[in-house]
Image 1 (spheres, rainbow, N blue to C red):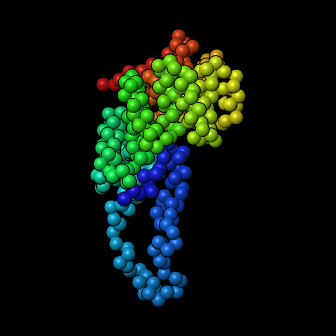
Image 2 (image 1 turned 90 degrees about the vertical axis):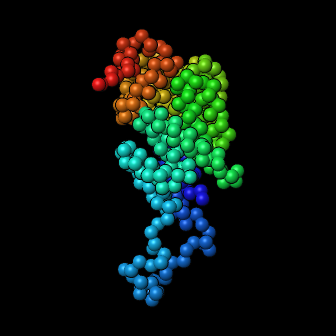
Image 3 (image 1 turned 180 degrees about the vertical axis):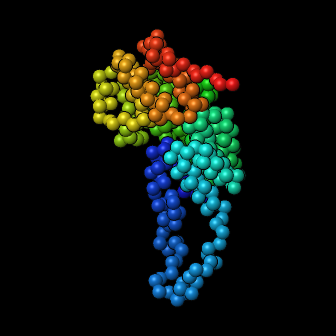
Length: 313
């Protein structure tokens, strides 16, 4: 069985929208009227007689229902940035149904994005992919395949395994195209100094989600990288940036020659959006190698901001 959760796209904004969807919270909302369970009419004697007593339909929830409830609870906790509870809920869901790849993809993304434990993320993603590959072609969970491949690709690229990372990105796009994957393919191309190809991927991301403010800011970053700082700032002026966009806003200002704003927004990204130490260290490392910040490599404030924290014994 593929639950409604199998179709939740990655990213907190998309997830929040899915959470608000009755079709996600109540699977019967997506059914035709003649497929939905009948409800007792008001005043029905049989319904009145059974009031207060458990009916045959009120048995203990099955595995599918328990897993969905745990994913919902975990997602609410993740949106509230209570990552320990989110991880516990997702992990329990994975234990309840070890043949379902969906909970594992939630575990992997949480570990990769928020907790910064990439070793644990790799394990979760690889397990999810193994389960997807065991599914029949008709039942194959392509969304989970896409998200797991993207996560593995992002990790490998950051570890400078560019070929392996790009292979996973391409597999992700083949399974289920997402703006998120196209964006990271674009970033990868900046690492290997192929900015024109990077901008083409940024355009594909924008084409998938043209009204998404994050996509607009991301595309503006590539305009600035291509030398059109004025055009990039014009796009930036149409968006009210939120904390998740601050890294790319910083990149745009760095490429536009405004070191003060670049460092300010980068600092805000590391403190206002990233709140786990391990993840923050990953992003410091990312900024050190990001070509958008080349003009700041000798800036004392930038160096202090991106310096790796000393490990405590």
